Length: 162
Image 1: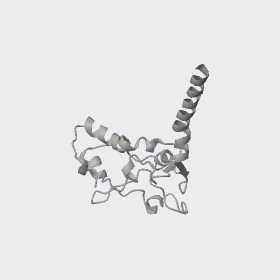
Image 2 (image 1 turned 90 degrees about the horizontal axis):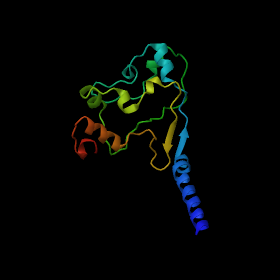
Image 3 (image 1 turned 135 degrees about the horizontal axis):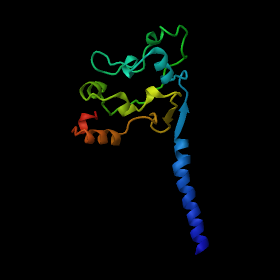
């Protein structure tokens, strides 16, 4: 009985370790960005004080995303990267999200959802889920629901889902 228990315990421990460590490692593939962009260094050198200095909202309130090259041109006259940037926080196709509502109406700081990206001294590694194709950094519904509960904001399913 002891040998069977020991074998079972080792098997269980191996399966749990594979599930916790090996599966996530196998599930996500790392992809390189076009260059090693360091938010902290750019903020310190350029005097950028807030995310919206580079990542702006359009006039209609939609998020403009990664800045165009003309934003970088005053300091960089050489070409920066050979391909487009990967999008860490792209939402699934069935999700509707408005940065304008969260930033302008709710007065949320970018770090509330995205964390302290502006303070990062190292480039953020892009990790893509091999199954869904989405980034590992995509926001999940539980995080959004928790934030809404804490702020007593009620929205039905169609408030966020198309």
